[in-house]
Image 1 (cartoon, rainbow, N blue to C red):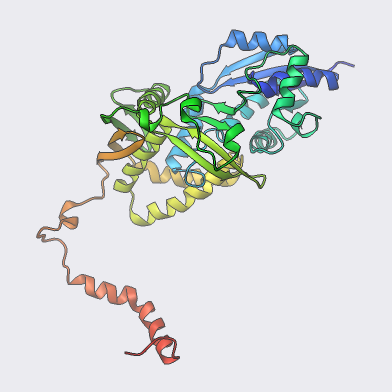
Image 2: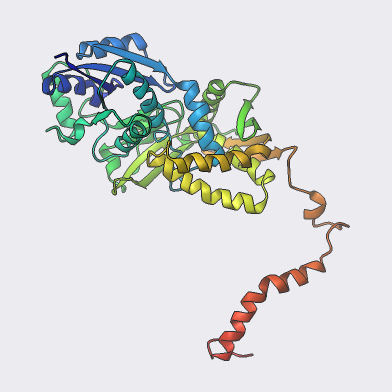
Length: 406
């Protein structure tokens, strides 16, 4: 009988570097590695060479950057989805994209099983596996972290050294990090104690701390069409725009999120996220929505945004509810077109002017000066009708001695 073929989600990091060897030690299998470049500019030749040295039969390296931005980042941006008020979902929506391509390669290579290096404590195992179940229910899934005897990252380092497997970390520098063009996350080591202040001078890679940012503000101009940024400071192209914003925002210390979050598996975890360009995009998008969306739509969309963020965080990108909510979001974005200027200064993002052909702001209605379009006498009747239910409740309370009488 021919050997079973396994496809491994491969990054070249600590976990996946040792999994190839572990799979071949414990299963009669050939291992195909697949790495997704989500905008960090991996060295394809080096990554393939390393995978082959670790025992892989072959290694695919797929550039997913443009697809990542247009098909995953932009839909989430249009939804204004933020998990627990801080997290811009950088790892969350990268995983279903990678898993989607894993399914394609697994079928191409006639693999029976897809493997990943996500731990049994984390969210990524769910994100990978729900995508595989949604797109290829016939494929088997193997997660070594849930079944092997290795219990910690230090033991992983020992395992690699014993087999001469090259790894990118040591026991002294062992943060768990995930990077793509949208963000860089940091977990583990001293960050595991929420009482510890992060050593930003040591961990920040995409940006400087607010204290180290220039004393002079930087202005950025963003142009949106239907909720999507199409030009920033004269720069066009999805990848080019995000790279530019990452650089400019990073130089101004914009985009740090230090948070204790609720993982899907039930525990709280502490992480530090760097999302410089994404933070600016979200801020600009919000300013434009405030100008162009009516009150009821905006407020209801805020409710949708929270649920949307949960679906993305929970790995349910291909869930029918996420797709249905996307239809609602896309409908709201038909008027989210215009220009936004922002001022970046020492970690802060401040609005500096917004215009749109779909603006709902009318100065003659809002002005404190004399106007001829709003009759203030109308407000009295409106308040009487609007407040009538509250007045009736108060009268009932007075009758029952629950409210003092005049």
